[in-house]
Image 1 (cartoon, rainbow, N blue to C red):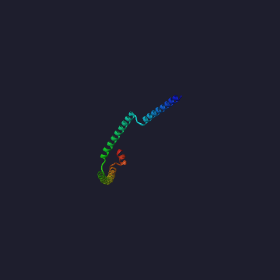
Image 2 (image 1 turned 90 degrees about the vertical axis):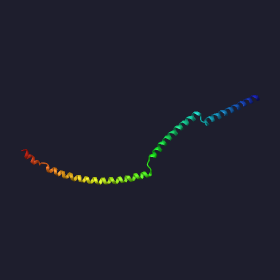
Image 3 (image 1 turned 135 degrees about the vertical axis):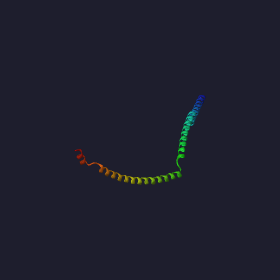
Image 4 (image 1 turned 45 degrees about the horizontal axis):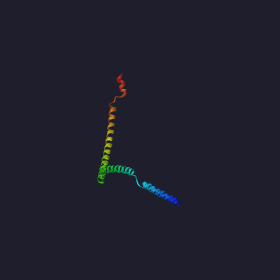
Length: 126
């Protein structure tokens, strides 16, 4: 009877060891990444890095085209000069507008003088 106990104890021990080995392999499988998943992750990471690199190159090219502080100051002073020129042109145009209105008034007076009177037209028609 003792040999049966030893054999069932031994088989239980072997079963426990096998369960521990299976559990260890299962744990290792979950602890490490599969090759396919790793390759997929590498491809995703590579696509992401390429996209970021393209965006960075685009931004660098655009930043190169942005004028510097010296050029911005020049543009500011040119705009200030243009503003003064525009104000002078506005003053001149308003003066010309005033002269034009005076000319219009005098032309209207001359047209009124040259227009025949309605009573005269009625007498001439008879």
